[in-house]
Amino acid sequence: MKIESLKNDRVKKWVRLKDKKERDKTGTFLVEGDHLVTEAKKKGVVLEIITTEDIKEARIPTFQVTKEIMKKITEQVTPSNIIAVCKKTEETFMPGPLLVLDDIQDPGNLGTIIRSAVAFGFEEIILSEKTVDVYNPKVIRSTEGMLFHVKIFRENLPEFLEKIHDEYLIFGTDVQDGVLVEDSIIPTQFALIIGSEGQGISKEVRKYCDKFFYIPMKDVCESLNAGVSASILMYEISKGKKYE
Image 1 (tube, rainbow, N blue to C red):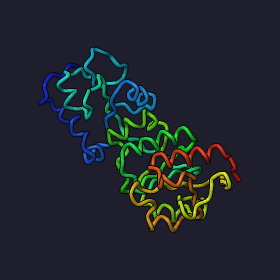
Image 2 (tube, rainbow, N blue to C red):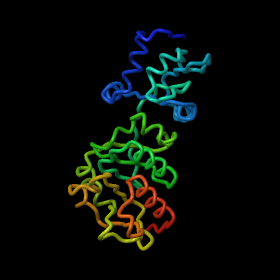
Image 3 (tube, rainbow, N blue to C red):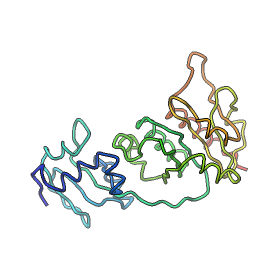
Image 4 (cartoon, helix red, strand yellow):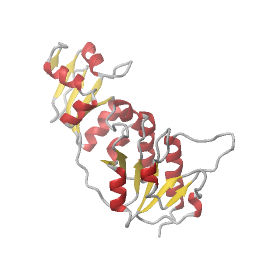
């Protein structure tokens, strides 16, 4: 089906998906570019395809639009030739290694953390209520499609940690009181908490930590950003494999 008017109701609906409230209301979001659309199709979450090209998709409604319409829908400076409207999925929580993110604000950091989580075997991620929207277009792009390879849940962290505390060993990060990952025994069920870029782990969440890790570095470098820190710690944990 061809659409050539910016006033078309479908176009207006797609444009509204740039807003978080609309994504939450409809349970849908946009992914842009061939790679991300391919990953979304593998996951089976694509509802519609929007493209500037004359292509046909089996069993997926496809709309050919003008470059002007595509520019209106996208948030990229250089619009892609293909966008998919995807549905959010309801995931089932399964016991195992958890990555917990306490108020991560930067979309790029969240995307990096998701990619690293997939790379190092953290299949479930818990987001605090104030963590940036995982369906933010910048987050989606920076995951490079790895968003579709993890289960993501949004929780009130103190309440969630209170529920799992008896069954999970909970690790935080602390440059003063932390220990090296390589000197630690990691149980099968554990949670690794990464704090926000500006404040680190909040006081309300910190009290649930059983142990703290730190990353050794040169004195001239006081800290690493959340994405880098999370990636290093997940790598070190996966490399050690010291599971009880």
